[in-house]
Image (cartoon, rainbow, N blue to C red):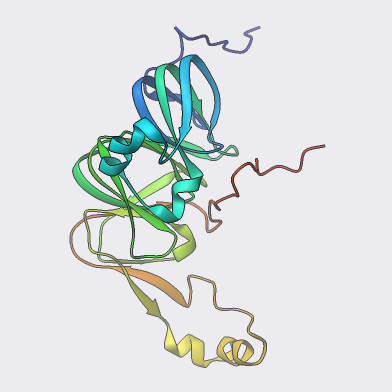
Length: 226
């Protein structure tokens, strides 16, 4: 009978998945890391908040999202980091002189060769440049080509294409649901009546569910505990 696979610092993969829900970063220098996404590490690694002392030059080059600064740290040193997020699917992606916007709750970590900026779409961040990043999704990611309309809750991000527009089904809104909304304020969140519309060249990333990977407050684990 085969037992579980037991890893150590030498058998963990190099910048690759351990399983569908955990990713191993081979750290030799610095990575940006969202707080709460590192579950274990081997080696000599320090974690420092964004904006501290000797990291000023790195922050000035790579981190331009003040609204999210408190949620991120810089992992610095040498070793292996294991990243995971509440048993969501985790994968790495490579940008080659690219431009990708991603829901802030989905982004786990990225190399400093990429520059992080605040997207004009609320709740999203934009990565620009060349490098690797790690992201979570609620189910496997599906890659789609515009023109396309997508449910906002299924949207993970978009790469190398224009910012989406809001699209509303006005006939649907004028019907029964519109009447309910006007009286109670309930309804209006489904993709059947409101979508993001993408046009032009590029790639749209969708997760295979409408349940969003929510951001959690710093220090929370997402579980109830005992």
